[in-house]
Image (cartoon, rainbow, N blue to C red; front, side, top):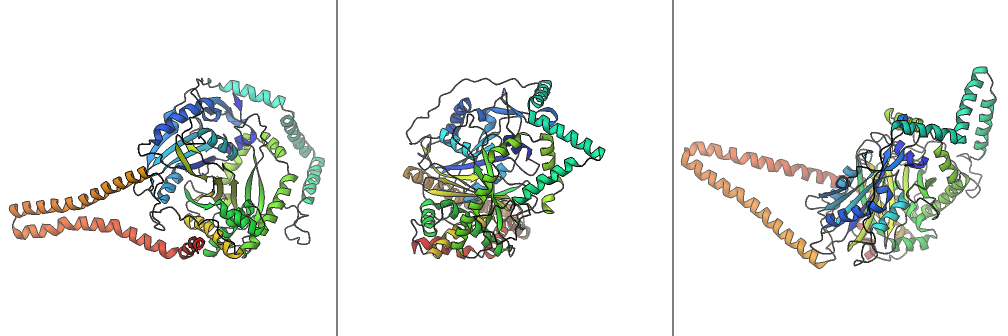
Length: 606
């Protein structure tokens, strides 16, 4: 039995009926051969990995009344069939269909009576590839440990053997409540800091009852000391190099800074890493500066489109890994965060990169001022009851609709493997991060690097950002805008967006494996033949019905029945088709930036 750390447990306490504490990754693989069955390989491999990876077999045990952080135990009733699941997309298997399925899956809570992970094998993609969506609670792993797990489940070459072998393991008995309460009491007694905190609380209450204000005076002095470290927002006399800004005021309002619903949207695009490196050199920044400027420019354009751009810059929370590589336990969270301004109030793309560079420098000084280790130790002292109750109260009272959050958006840039990875011979083609959102911050932008590309994953509340695909396209447009502003030459042509059923109408790219391409062509031929047959059969059936009706009924009566038989079918098909046409026309009319997107994607070839 092993107790969760304070930071691990905080991802459990953050959950409400509308918010989730799990993080996800969407891996898209090439199919190495036509007869490759992804689910069989995934099921077998994860069955072996459970034997070796502690996070995959441990489940939670809650302390009664939430008096202390929960514990992990090896699940005595582990069920692999529950965790590894198989589904398929309906034709044509477009990118927006895949993203809708991902949004539905991540928009569900995880069962805390089981190990907190699920894996979905998703087939039916238009270009013959297949996807694997992993859903893991943040209490179990962070982004960096997720990359470690990704490397453990894959190989460096298509013909390499999987390194792990099955190993027998045994689940633990679920502890009794009385044993957990006894451990909690002992833990409080042994922890002098927690004991001191409880004593201070008692002393303060007695002092207030007796009219002694020394404790309040000491608290005021501590507050003044903190204030002396804070740079006033309107003090422009001090340079950015000399100032440290700790955000205490609300961030400017945006459409997604509100209470969230249980439902999510997800959208994805990719940009070439070589192009980002060219822009890094052209602007004198870093890759991260260019990524932050890309996000700032895209958010600015989106807010301008909706006529809601604030005068002040937006604020972004940027998660930071504090791993040293010397951790005894890699399967725990080692993450902190910094707050950086996004120059959405700047209309010059090149200046936005410079401002992002200055903002990240200031944020890093803030990070050094408040040591991450100290913050993690402080999280150990958090009362689970108070933390969970406070977060639920925020959601229940919808305080995010009344008071602006100190931040507007979460932006993560996670470094991934530079060399290609393979899963049972299937090449990993892309790894798109699917993060999480919370009340008051209904948008998350996460960028994950893999091989020669940056995969961008946006997740939002379904109602707060209904046009999320427009926003993710604006990120790619911003790269083109930076090339135009700097005059730099594109390293590689920008990849066209994946086919969208109701979007840009981009054709699916052909599979790299010619055998897979041939199989898809055969399947398409069968589907076309079936659709032709489906169209001819009803006509033949109608002719037969008409012939029988002519024999049994007078001509007048059969004539009156003929339209009645045809009308419902015609009406039904029209009813089915017209909304699609109407919504498509509405969508194209509302998406004015579509023209801009097309020019942006063409610019590399010019």
